[in-house]
Length: 506
Picture (cartoon, rainbow, N blue to C red):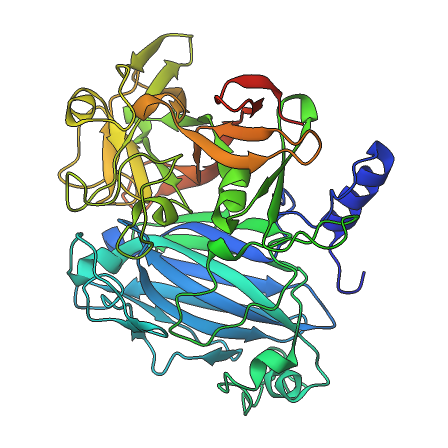
């Protein structure tokens, strides 16, 4: 299929059968892993680990101009970005390691064209959060969090497709690998207009799809390797959204859709769709792109397992990442009031945190359970709420399941952005993370049901991540490990002007 996406085509077919006008060309989370935007929920260089990343262009005709952005875990401030140019059928790989001075650095031996990554390995920068950074529109305001390099050691990354590249253009020719007939042979010239931010936008076609990627968090000395697939967002934008390196844009705020069957196009609107209970399709329109992206990640409860069997050295960490939280809580970079579904701005009561009250229920293999109970809190929550309640304070959070709290880091990843949980039982089980009830209730409003015209509300928080477990037999290097993506439940209601539910979203 040329310049199209299988998922979009299938959904368009469903739309025709079901009679839904305007279903296709909406922001959605593709379960098959292909998309315009890729979100990698976690990278780390702690505990002697390296994080290897890859991205693949499955389009065999057109190249892709991709914004690659690394964000630290406290407040999602940028620590590195560059533009990556993938030729048709290209793949790009790199790895993130300790830079030798308590920070993180990226390295690659891949030949795909990059603008701008001047020397390798390239250390991640503190300029995105310490006040020294200069963006395309001027100085980057500092936040209240830590200002030291160790803040760059763990976080997450996003890749945003800015436009497709016709191989017949000068840009397309410059990024195409010149094959030399040898396996793994072929190098692009990466000549002009690569690096020319004036010429490039005029050579880009509207973005389609076709990207997939993954990461591998490995410790060679310990014999561990945790691999996961990147989340893939389809239908993110029908517009070329190119910016040069060092620009904080495009971001997930840039979601814009052009729903089929609506004329003129809904300018400035981002339509989201998700599948709810019993396979019901939920559609909602938003004026803000970040709300549409949040909608597809909304979960009232996140589920996964844990394993802590001491007889086999069992250890478990959950990664819980909120990929859009910064747009609602970072008032220094995104001025305005704190907006739901989040309730506390970054640095409001603790300079390093924006807290989220949670409930975590754990169950062993034989139905035994215990709840970490949250008292009902006012909205917005006050200090007494957090004094009594467990909470997740960061954009990237690691929940470490353990009977004995480790000294200052999580058990599996050595994360400093961690909370410990003493789960029920001594071997393992499963847990449910309630993201809807805390802080007086987490709700994403501001949506409109295009079928009924009613306002819509999703309950919970926009979250992604996975469970990582490790077991050990014999020597310290005989480790066995695995990764499992979180499962989630979502709830959405049409509501009246008073915010009271009318019916389930449709």
